[in-house]
Picture 1: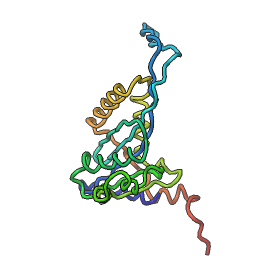
Picture 2 (picture 1 turned 90 degrees about the vertical axis):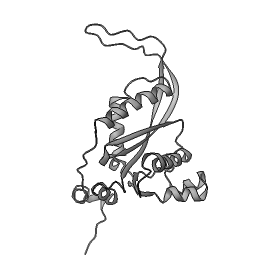
Picture 3 (picture 1 turned 45 degrees about the vertical axis):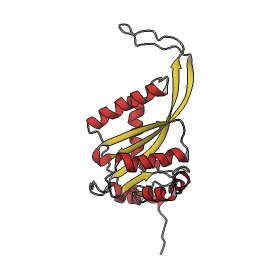
Picture 4 (picture 1 turned 180 degrees about the vertical axis):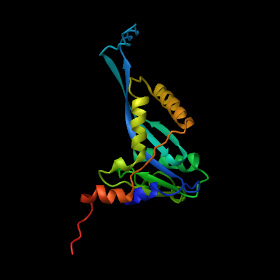
Length: 208
């Protein structure tokens, strides 16, 4: 826990950007009947019948100190998808970084060794050398600022039926562009010192 909190309070360094990474999902749902249009004093109404069109996985990258986020939509959330996200992070999103400080949880697909199962050894090593992993502790995923971004995404963009992947990508892209353009970010206040006081019961008890 303290490792992640210490990273959050490092000064901004463009050569060593901090990026939070997390994943979620969205069920695709299509309406079976045409909604009833809104009227004066009455919101638009939807029928209770709907059609499930599967689920898509959402991988979210969030760099709080540069007020930037990006969501990648995939059909699955396997170690292959995670490895390709790491390659995107290194080669597309932060190609000029010396080393990326990556905050993520301990999900079983988030293992650096999987890069060697997806890419040739030289390529896997190249990607790994650009990444500095910082894992949130078990039951401590709230320490990942990407979760806050997912909460905003759910309220502002995903709180309605979306029928297909094309529409999902378009809606998320519009939300992403607006939030990046407005330079929205997370003002993280919780410190290591706060943790030692407020979460004292989580620390080992040392007796004389």
